[in-house]
Picture: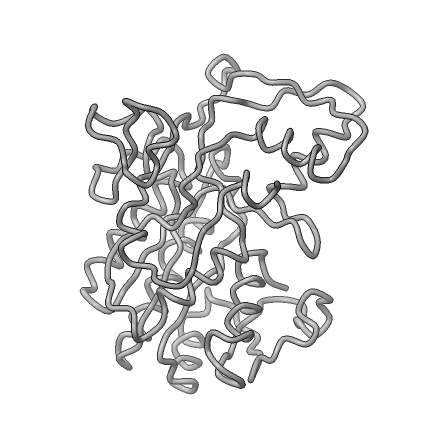
Length: 307
């Protein structure tokens, strides 16, 4: 099957962005033909691929000769709480770099996914706020693409390693840093399901208000990734691919309760800083560069999407 970002990106790509029969896609285990969410999606060819098999991945690139590749695959990693390991590191770093090098040999464009967790969440030096995020509060600073990275967990460390190796290739590379990815339709993705499970929990549960994220929805991200992958897009390098709005999981729970008309809400606000967990707190990202690059796609925040 496919993850929620890959599923959304394939759907968007086949529905007007790349034209009929222009999209080929990969899967790992179960064939997407058995995925109800992908029924009717006009993929030219589906390819079963284990990305850790680097020779097979390179052969597929040679066979397809793509103009662009959007790499959405990621191994199970546990996020900020994950312990990492050789297999996880290889899936986040080596498999991505291998495919990028193969695509570049044929002159194609390569779009990789990174994360806001390349930063430590402790904030940046005081400076002018991002014009695109000024509504989030005066005197607040946001991480820019050019700010020094300082990950506090294995997942962020591996993504930094991936970014560094990709940028050293010097090719037609885009690295899109995302944040918490949300999917509501046709069925809730992992991020929203976690909040809904918390809301429905029989016991009271704490959702943090101090873990600040530029949450974005998978379908909006899919459109933005397709635009970044287009040969018409001249941008290369690292870009923060997130919505302007900054929120937290407790606020998300309140919006979902109202949007879905849920009768009960056992979620209560709390602070990650007081939880004993070593998780990044304020990962607010500057989106000024994004607004100068994207011409068609729009990344809407949770307030707009869940109103």
